[in-house]
Length: 295
Image 1 (cartoon, rainbow, N blue to C red):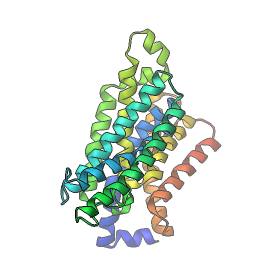
Image 2: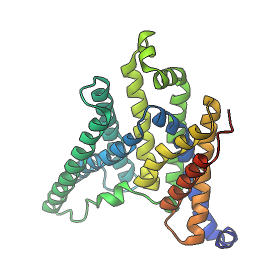
Image 3: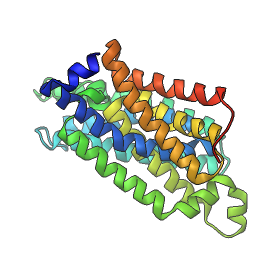
Image 4: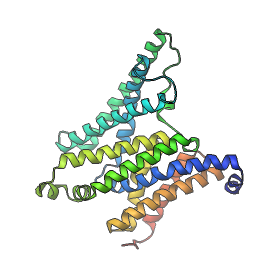
């Protein structure tokens, strides 16, 4: 087996160990958030927020072209990533406010931000390249693929640290506000009737979703980020009903997808991200095929 060969080769083992260490916090975070996203029907929000990041890329490119962001490492990549995260947070708040006020259905609000951000980002990146070239800084503005999308197998020490820090922040926020979030997720109307402010809770939920999605997208790619928001929670809700069991099952499904996908990628030479999605989808299909057994 190729997996055993890699485990016996120090150089290759280090590569996949970094991938596993970076993927574990992201999948644990995704497993927990996936339950909230599925219950509140926010799965499509993953697409909206992840594609809204193109607008953040455009703004970061413009700031870089005019000299307002650092050009040299180690600060260049973190600075651009921070701009993208802030933009996605703003987009998630816009989606949350529009859908809360019933100005637009939530899927329409997501579509508005998705399309607008992608178009705006494409234009800004092109303009930023022209500005940089005029200033004699040819090649300064990278393609948005190199800024936005990552491959989990290429994760390094900085990526591992970023993943664990973000996961700790997101999971800490979810634990601290768990009662409000659960009440809002399962019965928003009753939560309002009991005097719980729905807008701050909705914005909190959209914020943690945005941070988690952008981090997952940065490390693993947009397809896997979206899958992590939908498939683990859907799998868990097929096999369990109690919230504690659902959260554990969702996290287990996400981690299983990560490990199984990495092994599948090694054995078949498929890309790691799509391989993880294939395992997550297969796990969901298996959960649909068997009767519910957990409580």
